Image 1 (cartoon, rainbow, N blue to C red):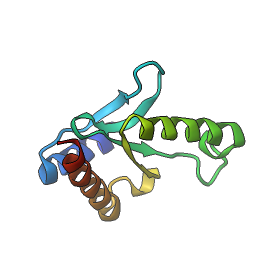
Image 2 (image 1 turned 30 degrees about the vertical axis):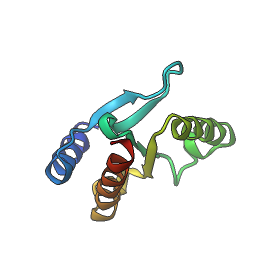
Image 3 (image 1 turned 60 degrees about the vertical axis):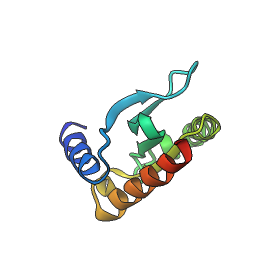
Length: 109
């Protein structure tokens, strides 16, 4: 996550003024983490690996656990952007993250 984190943090900070946190625990009682988060506006970013090789996120049990995690995140007021590793730093994904931050900033203020 090192290089990608640094580039993601730099881009998000440039366009929104917010810093990106890694491995952020968002739930008050569960051990769930977001890969990246902007806690001030409750935007989480999840990078879903293993999409082409049957990774944990795309097997039955893993998919069900992710479903529970993302539903709980929504119930706690989080907006979650999901992407795959090769798309994390794409213009499309960065634009989506910036839009999510700006949208959720208005809701949380």
